[in-house]
Image 1 (cartoon, chains in turn green, purple):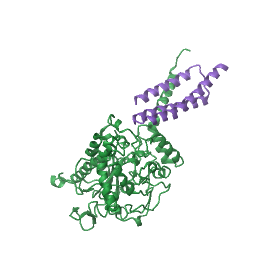
Image 2: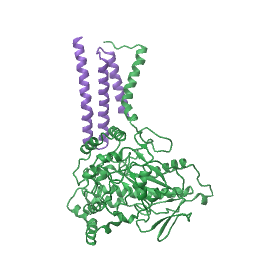
Image 3: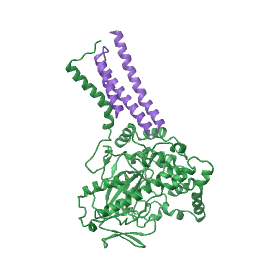
Image 4: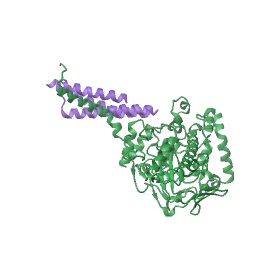
Length: 459
Length: 88
């Protein structure tokens, strides 16, 4: 048959060609990545909804300012008898070399070296560096902007410094309780109405009551690294994120100083306040069965950090992306946890597991002691629960947007989707790396092993 | 992006050819065909994406999950078109 077209038919058919093109390109745009909100607010897909209250139930009356030394991170010894603690603590320091000598995958000399070297980085302090010239010293006026402009500016600066997502919490009588009463080093954290200037003494860190805002941000971790947990190779990912943040924190403190304000940071790892709690209140993610933050963008593949400031910023609201509800159906982390430290109860509860849990939140409290004790068997900080979480995925495949969109819209498919994810992604043995540690050394991964374009609109 | 552009042109050209050829399709055949195309796109997109994510198992699973329905739908349209031609 001869193939001929008149002008009208040609124009009509070009429209058909366009539909074909749109059909091919359409799903990528329609399912979220290019959706953006108002300027300065992190672009998020429509199924990540801002809500007035977090998805996790909080009894603010039961919340009090916690002593960080009660966490197992700092207070491990107080939950064990002396003999057990000494044995496990010694074992934790030496077992990686025993595993290495036994030829255990992920424990080679180069894996251990990478782990040990990944934690090297800048210092961190409560008051921050003082080597950035203040506007006053330079003879120029300090920055003045609306809270919205300030939020936008801080978000841009933090991204430039290496943070992933950024949110803001205004301190009130409730959120103030999320600041630790005592820091890991035993210094009391005082919120002072009398003092206008922050200070640090031998016994105290002073936060002026006028500093009413908390900047909260995440630092991405590498999925390819974490899937090699619980080996030193996998643990290098966590160490790297903390090390990167020490630089990010100091830079943000320097930036705030440079515009005429101050930022009060973590004096040590996990100091100042409860990171997941601030992450939840700032809408960076939702609390989860891990009793940690899960973000819509990176799942739990983040570390969460915070800084108190006197720069007025516009608070961001908590979110509902269906994550907390999904955890009710999904037991993957609890199933794969080698020490059985995570709750397998379908529903969250106010019942705590020990003195390391402060309580007051209806969540899945973890047995942090058995978790920490297991670290003595790996010589690392494990991390399997992060690695197997269904939300710990990259965003290259379209299916993730479809699944997350479904989870954020309805709960009826949650059980099936969790099961599917377990079968397709979490394929490794129970207490070993999900992926081959040796293979990691052959990969051509981007800087820090992370895709810094993930979760952002502008590349 | 180039892949999608090429795929868009190929799909458009395919539809153009079908429309101007002697093969006559009923309206519901077109619906099934469009559905098949959507499944092909999802199969290719998810296979590619999962391979980029270094998840070959997920890639194969998703290729099969979307590719097999796409093939079945295509077969339905082809069989119906051939039958239509035979009876015509």
